[in-house]
Length: 333
Image 1 (cartoon, rainbow, N blue to C red):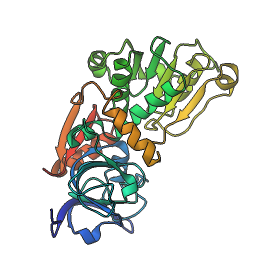
Image 2: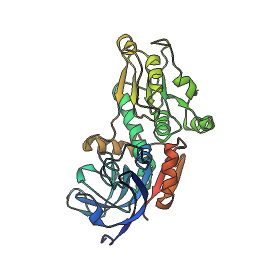
Image 3: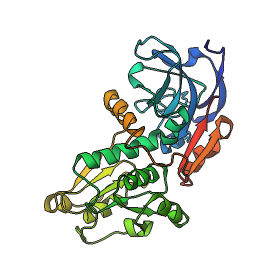
Image 4: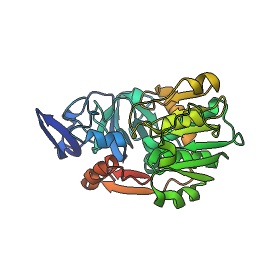
């Protein structure tokens, strides 16, 4: 394929106090350096993307910027012999969509060290049905199990379970035989979560309520916290002895108010999930597992689709807390 003279992209830009966003025509000369040129087929909408599209989002580190922290598509040109033209690939994490033009464009240029060859059992659409949200969920499950969590050990709590990361974590954990409990502030989502395999649910109030007690009844054999802020203290004071929580989100805030008691009296642990910075060899290995034993059971569950023309509404909705599952973005094809 010969790259087109111009292509469409969703761009955010700032000129002094003036913030603008919308669709533009770009050329390959507008793309950042990299040795792999990709025709983008699909991307996804993530909370970080929504923040990048807000004037006060504090995510974009350079302007102008094409947001979109992940993408899947076909290689048009490559100077890396290990990544051939015509092959399907995934790119996510690192500086993509933050200080390096990302997935909300018909063409993207990436360093080969950020590119993952598509696993044989995934299509580009399926890869973005998983997306960064599913990748982060799988990373969290992998970390908990690597630390010793096994099916039958006891209930595993997932907060923010109606969102993209939380819902996928629920599905993966349930498929692997864990007893999953879901915390959500959206009562209308309880039925869908039950269908994904949860054994029980908690309300947002239950997992965010302040407590004068540094420790409470030990309930959870493990947890995936996608919310941060007020939910993590609850998890810490209710984890079982030696259990861990995979911390992978901050939609509820970045402050953490807790005590040392859970750590020194129950030996619990917080496992930080830096999915953006995962080394490429580990990233490629985890994507292989996402096509295999960590594959979410229903990649179409709670999946909504938009295109570049409808992208802006989804970006605003995810920041407003109106996400239900995941959005995939049709870019090309």
